[in-house]
Image (cartoon, rainbow over all chains, first blue to last red; front, side, top):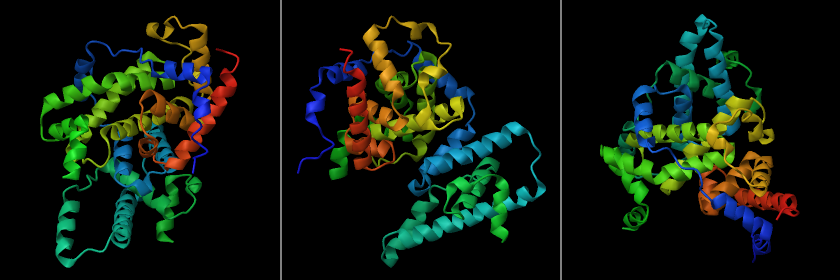
Amino acid sequence: MKDPMDIPEQSRDPQLLEFDKWLKNNSIQAPQDFLVRVRTHLRNSPVLLDEKIDELFQQNSSLSDPQMIWKIRGQLTETQTDNAPVRPWFKWLAPLAAAATLTLAFISFQSQGPQVLPDQGMENVVTLADTPLDLDEDMTRILALAANLNGTSDFSKLESVENLSFLFE
Amino acid sequence: MEDNKKIESDPSAVLMLQLKDGDESAFDQLVERWQSPLINFFYRSLSSYEQSEDLTQMVFVRLYRAASKYERKAKFSTYLFQIARRLLINEFRRSQRKPLDSWDPSELNAVTSGQDHQKYSEIEEAFEQCLHKLPEKQRTAILLLKQQELSYQEIANVMEANESAVKTWIFRARQFLKQELKDLV
């Protein structure tokens, strides 16, 4: 059956053909020394928070909801620029939230994954251990926020890191 | 065997695996191979040469840093443009702080660099305006289809959506463009 979304007559439109031709015209060239610039950038720029957030969520496609990532990013960048003092409870709450997230992720992995034979089990554990999460302060905060979101079905309800208090209810 | 065949038909994935094994020259080849497609993808999305160059650099920085964890799960171009799209969305958010679908790249470029002022014909300006009127998802989908020549399935992987959603975005984009362009050419 013909897919109604594939409409060849549209691609015969002269306007659209011209437009497609324009899209394909890769007229912009990178500068001659582009590779040198990239190498310099690599040497000089630290790993940014944005990069850590994307890397973290790339590891689990079920956590890659763009709205959630946006809110987490917003939270983290706002708290960074505010220079507001970190509330004392956050320092001990964040690792707890991180641990809760990892536990949930592990349980989720266990329950969703395919059944494995006993002798394959150890192999899987070894594979997981090859890519341990590096839990520095930033990552801990990201995970804490993710744990907060994990507790609610509606991501839009995330207003502040104070929502983390739900963990103690 | 099947995996070996797939990887041989994707030389950039081979280069990425070589980089993972510490071959620095593989990274140089990846930059050489992908700098033009990336910078043009960003340029069509942002219309700013400087921003396009910056974002292209950032894609390669991320690629290099991710090499140690790289596993070939999909075509390399899918992996690369997934990084590119994430950076593009971050850039939209940072610049506008407003819903993505109402974002108009032309607002971002009140001040543009020399190369942005290339002599555009009237028709090219109209094309650019039409493209920028599209919501981000439709714009990115049509760019990946027509400019980067990715398949629907590959676009779905890049955009973390399903194939039918991609078809819908492209269908709507083309209907909109058809309407907008009908008096132009």
